[in-house]
Image (tube, rainbow, N blue to C red):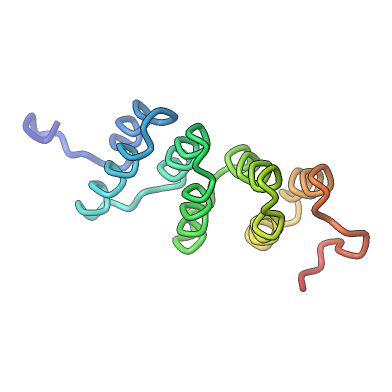
Length: 136
């Protein structure tokens, strides 16, 4: 595209990434790194694609690292992406990590967005009766 005079932006990279999303997490990661090297900042969509690619390959540890990095950069993935991560962590008996994920998301979003997270937390058996919305 740059040869024809078109500038690549984050949206254009996300379209390229979407072609590999779910199939090749290393290619998705490579495109995100390319984006960063050009001074473009990957957005929430970029991180969603990378995490989804890791999920579909059963690479939960890598998906967890991406989530931590996205929190650091204030690029929190959407509910459905993080729901799969929380469910996968619980299935792999990584409840401490799943609780951390839900606690972090609850801190990030306003209360009116938390109903789905509270419901998921209960479904996964990660909440206690005394928890409420309080944070330790």
